[in-house]
Length: 183
Image (cartoon, rainbow, N blue to C red):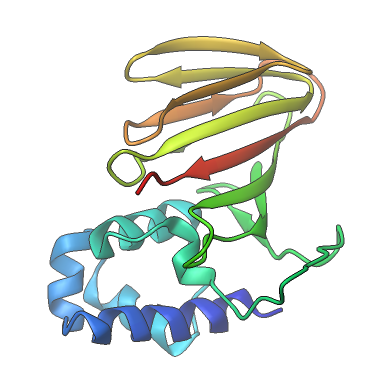
């Protein structure tokens, strides 16, 4: 799966459906016109925060930019989802299930290297993030408060606010993330 090409097709479709020029989308997303053009051409592999900014500008769920055709029953094998990285290679997410017209959530498997952190900009309005820690300890800093989660713990919070994932331990942190978009 070439994620860059999928994002390119979806970005162009979503932008043209809204009758937006690259310049207009640049203004509402905070992403340069040149970067948007490169993404639409499939010649750029955008970071997670870049995708969030575009999705927020278009007022769509994050995975709307990665949407493909889905069968009624879908099995996703561990090696199938494309890896996406944060601003550094220390944070990696794998999208197992994107939002669709009949699914208003996204399911991700995430990894954060020992001693690393990743800042995530706020998601779309009213979005909620559900986290389940599989291995390690997650320190989550949000604009509304700080939380520490151990393996087996879970949390839901308003993800329209900025938040930071922090791994203070010496082992790989792995956790599941569900981004939910209420109607």
